[in-house]
Length: 435
Image (cartoon, rainbow, N blue to C red; front, top):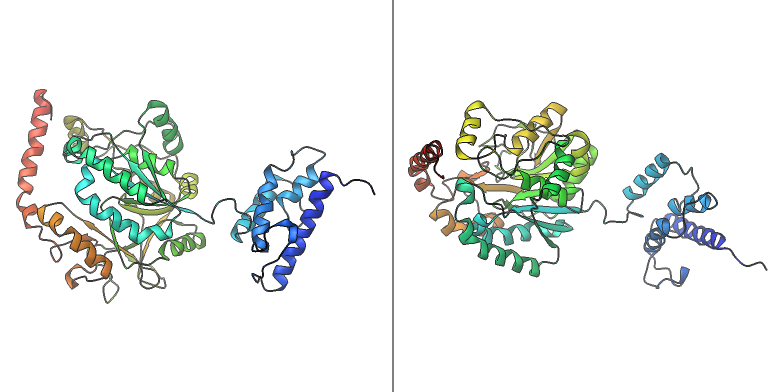
């Protein structure tokens, strides 16, 4: 009997695989354990065998002319087909849809959170809350650390809080295996690479006209390991407790290609399903849902592939004239906020954002509109109330925390002081002093 060639051995192996797959389909895709087949452990089912064998498809044999038919079978173990890139791409898409041969977890998701040292007072309470609500729905938690100090309120107490900030996030990383920390890299070649990816070569500014984060958002988007990204700011809180919301968002976006972004319902749901603090168009859905043509930098679930293929390259847009002068006087960069640029591009391309509650218990978001001593004092109890659903009627339908949950009177009384300080910064800039 002539010796069996490697190509013939692979063909026989693949024929065995097809017989196993056929048996599984005939038996209603049952998960019976098949013992001894292919020399794999007895507690590995047929689909697991397919996954393990499929990993050979790029390494088993070189794809040359004499091995073309073998390479074709390796790429397509369920039957022969043409070896054109388009056909192989369609076959891979089909197999991925059936979650059989995908090399990464099916539709894996990154939870991407932007952090900065100035966030420390609320971060120590809200970040663990975010993990409790979302960690079970994602495959990676990417903490994007922006250590580039901003001017004005975005850089308040930066140096004083930096040691405690770094210590806290390192302890959180050690306690949660899904966490990966990523420091925003402002080196010129990295800025150029990310600018090419999102803005077609126009250099992304470090900050926006108001001194708020700009480049750090796109650095986080580019660094995520998975294309499905749930981006949130460090002060976002989530009620409802649903552990299926992200899966529902994925299904909605797969079914509706015109949807670019999905968000949890803005604010605790009301008895009549309406919003109180926003005017959004109701959207037909199985739970309270609304549509918008804008995007928020606070929270956004999106597919990076759809984002890049339909919205990039993004334009770097200037703000209104008054804001441009304000930016120059305060030493900031004269560009719109990232969410304004993204919203403009979404509207121009005809895409939508859908905010929805989802299957019971659903998920909704809420955000502190400001900071004061009363907020920090009540924050632990505030988070407890949000997680347990103990929400006063006056808060329902409002996406920002209002006076029914936190006393904001001191913030309103001090607003004029902030305005005076703002004009003082402008005066110092004109005089040549440092803000």
